[in-house]
Length: 483
Image (cartoon, rainbow, N blue to C red; front, side):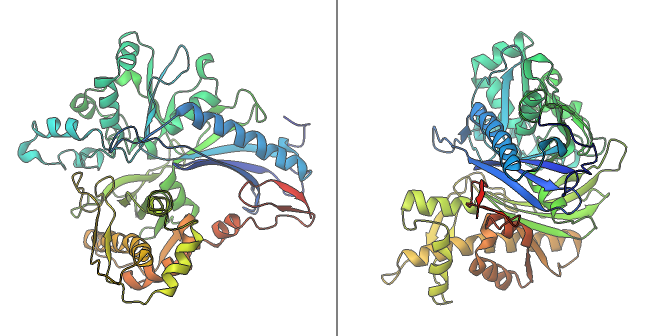
């Protein structure tokens, strides 16, 4: 690290600094905040590759994720130095990550035993069919009273089961007691805190609540669930709260800095939007779209297709706070599909212009079910459909229908939440890359009949706004240069 400064950051004009490592499906980014003001001082972002080996299969390279993390840490610290801010004033970092994505690795070599299986992957369908044969009426909600989740390819336990059934390297490693399983947070914490030289194998309650293996009441790996999926306890990380010191970074530019917070990405957005009161809700528009509704310390089991999940637990002795969640598989991913597969747009900004020019009477209906339908339907067999095509339809109508599809799916979830809670939202807090599209947000408000309130700080960060009098960013890279 750089030269020493006071532990409180008193010698720094910004005070103590906090780092936030955000590992998402499409990119990794590391941001530095002034703890006293929550101002973003600088950041660095690195895009990630996604692989599609077969229909319905979605994978990423765990080593690429780890390398991207190291690059982001290093470059962001370099940015701080350009701003003449001492990196030694970074007092802690927190991690937020794409949830459910599952990695198996070798404890002796530190290498992954297979590519990461991404949350939207559908390869476990046949395993689910076999499991449901053992369940009365093939009820996919058979385990919801314990873990809050339906039996779905979405969750990590099925991905672990697939790896154990199909990857010899995983089978051998389990037999020889050198296999670890985890979601991306576990993979990163283990590596950053030492890896094969004593890395900490842990996860937090929010990520654990997405595996189908944790009991929502006692926040522990549940013996019945472990038996149902036939996952050995010894390969799993220790479950910790969302706010405690898990370990210190062992090397690199942030050597010695504690990792003191961990939240799954959607729970982190709930916390970031300060939805700490029962009844508050937020919706995040990323690769998918995820709407979380704070239910306080009460576990609410949905009767209308929503998930029950842990929202956060701020300390080992704190009571956990729970949430209802509606998960939409395809949101920002549909923009990527329009750009890369159909090649009808060149960039995301075009979608706003196209949608604005078209009349309000768009007769095209687009159901984007590339990976089946998530909440509130949970149809793993569903596939995409575009309806209403006539001779006067052009690519613009399809683009607008794609945007509207996100809004209609969000309305489905809001209606399910109203049925479960008896409450109607007075406003919807939103964040994520798609919220910069004003036309989309207006459509969302109109279709749902509720005011939509954007996270202004997030939008300012996305625009790369200036963070000092003497320096400015060059945009998405977060690198600074003299004006």
